[in-house]
Length: 444
Image (cartoon, rainbow, N blue to C red; front, side, top):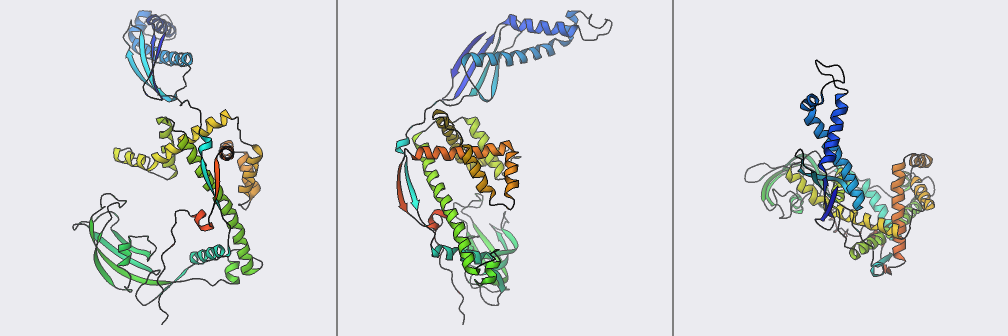
């Protein structure tokens, strides 16, 4: 058997295999002989049919089966001989399949990249330093109040912060378009759920009012078929409601299952939760920087097959329509998920190689601590722990997370780490900008 290997790219290989004709002929002959001893044919006793007749009737099927099995066996032999480990199923390219000639075919596949992670000392990390202040607790209480807003109907023009219930009907060049019509839609003015220009047109209108206006969609609007176009909208205001926030008192505290010390107890409970969230937020911020530094220092080739698997997994998690196979949908799926898929694949390869090179394994004590901490947030911690112990795949996922943390710790020992003053709000929502002041209705 002759084997040759061709590198088509950094990771793609074509293995060409040539199996001698006599090996294929013997495989076919052995199969025909075995079949002749089993097959029942009219005019002959069982197992006594002439080999030539069996070949004439079953030859094509037997040859197909023999070629298929011989390809499988010979490919395994070739891969073992060349020390190759394909990622995913190889794509088979038949070449010579004529009777009497050598069996020749090629298998195309990807292999894992070979590399040694490097550049650890060049990773730069800014560790945020912050604490939970009284103002942070005040802000959290205000957020909780807003979550329990009661909306009261008012008989006056709407201002920013009010909730309006509307019917709207839009058309572009006289034609309706997807998403251009709605009934009994609640809009909190100033929250940005709809385009700002649309919401601005509703300010100053009262219940029962109707307005009509032109609205140009931004050039980068998410619905590409209407981006940059101008629509004519007719809007009817059904109701206008103003927000009423609950008072911060004993009743408010009890609504959060705080049984003792009233507001002081609520503030202490919130502070403890926020301090835990802050620790997790700082850890996540550091981890993001470490991982990005590792990626920047190691630009490695990525197997397309692994990227494809990760894209499908991300799409499934976010409920992307996987049953649609048209080209436009596939392009959208790649556009949405490929960047993150490439990042995940690269990090997975780097962490795996680094763990193997440094002989780092998941610390079972840390795995247990992680599980106990997570389980403590549930009503029945023991049941959660028992479920993980009885679910090997879920437990392996936890081990993978713990191993990532251990790799981060290992890298931090070698990275250049500085500290930077920050705040609870900045760490918990790094991309969130402060809200614009909300107009208040005059009490007069």
